[in-house]
Image (cartoon, rainbow, N blue to C red; front, side, top):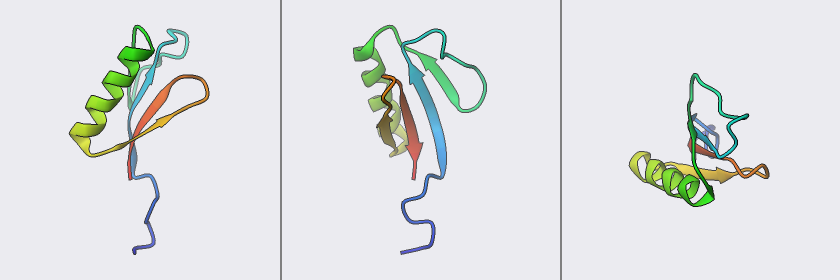
Length: 66
């Protein structure tokens, strides 16, 4: 294994249902209507980029590339 094994190479998207945490800029930040939509968006993005999803204690999620 290389020295970068398991390390995050980049955040592809940040997805939230809280409009107060919805920020703009890089990475892509999306505002979902509810938890179901959040999970659907995260899954679609992760499949398209062969990426991982991290669900945060706040209810938000990150789509990351390792």
